[in-house]
Length: 138
Length: 320
Image (tube, rainbow over all chains, first blue to last red; front, side, top):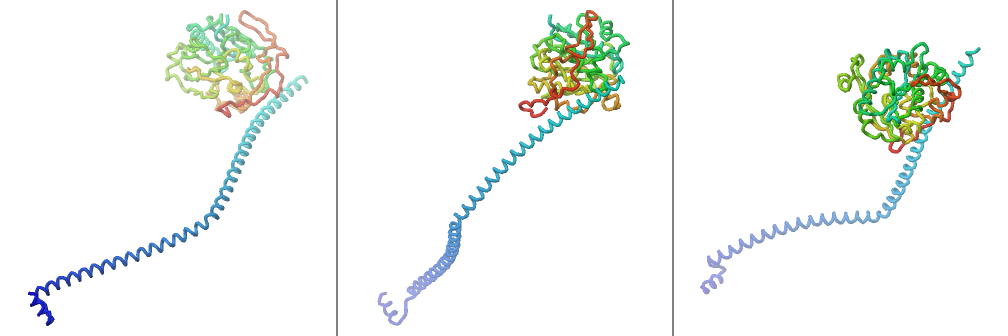
């Protein structure tokens, strides 16, 4: 068997069995090559996605860094707004208090006005009574 | 012996509201009988303010019609000149609350009920007075239910009065003042009435609103005001405020009620110590009748402005 293979090999031929075996191996190699091609393609796609992601993250990091750089300024502005707001709230409370005081004063004035009107009613009535009494004996 | 209750009413024999005497004697007899049945010791103080000279005195009419009230009836007849001297409104025909003050000042009961001559006490009111100890410095008020005009009142009993078919309207009363037809029922201990010095004698231009003005005064003075929990019944008649307030002519309205627009809930009073004609000379006419002679000493000044004051607000109610 070995001699035959050697002879065939010497003239550049192979046995049929050998040829089938080689053919099978060649097919396997082709399949493997296809698989590897697909894996490579997938890997490329994956790489592209990761690159995009990395780019996006880089941009976000850059933005975050920019924002972080602006943070102290924003904090200062926020503090200023807060201070201004507190001032407005205090002013509002003061205005409200002044309005309440004004309302009380107005109500009190109204009450005094009513009392004064009543007193005027009495004075006018008394004058009329006195007038009648004065006229009667004449 | 000190009576439990003094009922103070005022009127005169002038036919006010049509058939005044019958209305008055009917309610008086009814209330007297019910209080007697329930063992409530009482006196009835009738103040005849400026009586009509050519007619019998109202007290005599009452005793003749209802002899049973003779032992409990005391009458004060006020010289007509007091009306002219005290009134600040020449068109006002009757100083009702000034007159009531005359009776309140002289009442002896532990509690005094200032009411009107056309009011029936309900079962609940009489039972409350009979069975409970009334609180001091507490003004008791009652819802007023109007009995239909024209209802047969020849034989009045509580069943008739309680029957809703005989009612027309009723005045609900709400805190803090429980005002609403207040002149029909103001019950307060005698000392309380004296502490408040009765009804307003300073603003003498009106009759209407004097009752609620008293409630404002009481409230401002820290008195409690409460619903006694039972009604009184008002016998409707021609000329009552309820039936004629929208139709009376300006002159008759002024004569009956005086200035109706005065601020009775905003301005109160501080009567002088001599309120209720304290200094009027009294002359006994008979065992039940005292005549109050005219004297300028008893007449309060025409104007006493410091006695017109603002009510004090109370916790929980900025206004009344």
